[in-house]
Length: 281
Length: 329
Image (cartoon, rainbow over all chains, first blue to last red; front, side):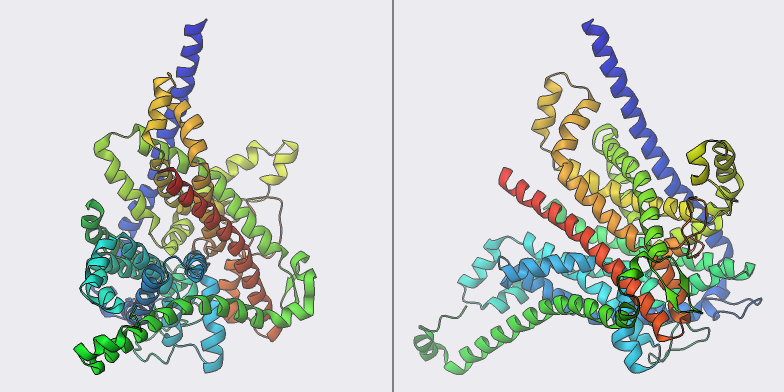
């Protein structure tokens, strides 16, 4: 009786454990298939023209040069604006306001912004920038991306600063340094790798963002580096090309997708490598 | 902080100009960090204000009925949010039904069954996949998944349940390939690594002592997971799932490609539909007329409100978990 009951329990356990293995194979299998098709379709379409020519009119060959340049420009703008703000805000949360009620509230708001639907952020920038300016522009696109960068950097900066042992701060204060001096030359230095990681993760996050760009920077079929005009970006170019009925454009869309994926993977792996020494500590 | 009472004495030693300068830098720096931190709250308030502002014409014109009207007609300027709300909820529900059990399965595999050597590589792979932009999942869904579903899965289900009363209407209609079900499936695949990674992190916070005690009493691996690990980690798992749900609700690109953008409610999950974010992405730049634009912005407002509730609940559960963990250690 008892041994048959034990057997039943073991069989039951075996079944469920088997299911979890199946779940893993199934889940990772899907993701493997996605990456596989992406690499296959993407790399079979990539040639020099992708990097040297601008997006073509329907039915002609072309490349993604203007979209790559646009993504790069807006990304640099967004990071240049968003990272310093994010680092300072994260510093306030971790240093000056660590236990205050205000910091608790700001932390909550920041976490909401971190996962807020990015298309809503696009609507926000449309309302405060595109409408008053009267036209779509790369400035607006960069601003929308910066709104995404800020919460990511705030969160990682705060987390990294919280890891710094208080003894470091106390030692510096005991030497007579002011609070701001301690932050700038001790805690920031100690958390340097982590803060850079946050910036890299933010870049990875925005390089694939499409929704907030659709009605801020719009899209541009031609080469343009004027930030006051609509500007192409890789994700919006992919969106437009994939939704079109043209075979050539579909190939370009796959190439664009593989470029974005490679960039994102490279950034996240770099961030991981940078972060790992502090993890071991 | 600089102590004001000793300032006089110290300034005799150091020279008051220098001390005043360092006091000023301190104050400037502190105010700068405070200003940037407050900017986060300003952004948040600005988003809500601008959505209300943009949606106001539609709110005034339709009132509460906006939420319960299925019509979406730019010509007669009749707009209602029911179809996009329905599509958003159904696609997210399908996504969660698929990704939560599989994600938990992966987490159990990673924490219990996986050979030690494979644990880190698989874990890292899952985390990297969680960072892949949604547009990649979207174009894969459009070019690869939809044709496959159209050719195999959908006709099979339609014929399988064609004569079963209730299920027949759930799986009715021609197999377009795109539609509500495809969108839900893509969302599931997209949120899967996220659910798996966060659940694994939560499982790892379970103290080994608890598990060892259960093993010591003769529990099987499954019983330990089901009766010890899951109950202990419940709040964290629910919080993580709600974070994933928040993502699924607001996701735009993975859905827009494969949903079909049809403003109607169909009982069949194979029929084309729309979601809030897909409707905004597809129509916003083409919307003419104040009321059309305002209706789309009101959709955005509804989406922001719903995701806010879900995310706030998720944050609350995760915060509670953190403070509980703090008390226990």
